[in-house]
Length: 275
Image (tube, rainbow, N blue to C red; front, side):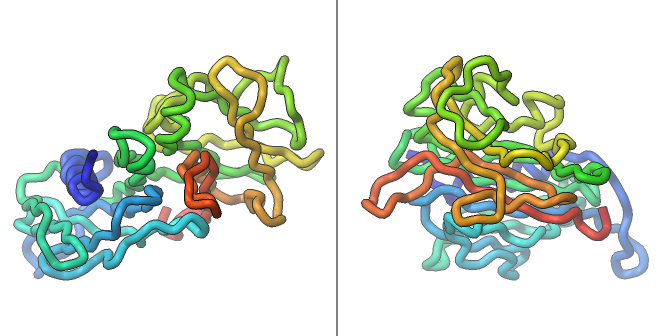
């Protein structure tokens, strides 16, 4: 069983080794400091909370799971080319892991989301940390930005060959004849990587003005929905409106009976003001 603290730390380390854009900011008048912006999403219902420290300053405290709304941290500045230390600590203050980013090849103005996904009880492979690059494309009238993430270890356990994801008119019980948005979708994959060749990329999509639409999940190659999430403004619906950027996550959700079920979480946001 993986320890979520170690997973978080390992992804912090991975992020420090990835550089995409660069820019210089002033630092004491002589040196330059580069930073990347990293945020965390806690989508593992039975993994414990953690605290993240940067040079002994807490930057994400008591970071725990929430089904709805999704618990996402603010973007945290991670410096590059300094001797800053990142630490992940348990709730009792024990340092689980630490790393210096002195030699990290990380450039400024690159944004990332790290999703800690999958219930520990579902599989020994969970939780997993899913790294997404956050880039927000320009949207036209009536458009949204959409990316989907397979973060359900339970679905991976139930559907060994993956799942197919559709967006189609709501209320259907058979999707025969329809083409999935993404097929054979497996745990930790995202549609940016699968469809656009860039991890975390948002696809631009027209927001339907006709009949209500739903996101459907079926077994790979199947036509019977295992999950339907309507797009709308009511309870249990995805409240998507024109101009939004939507990260939809297939997730393990606690049930009222104390078990787990495959469900959906979503981050719905505007583009950052400095995008």
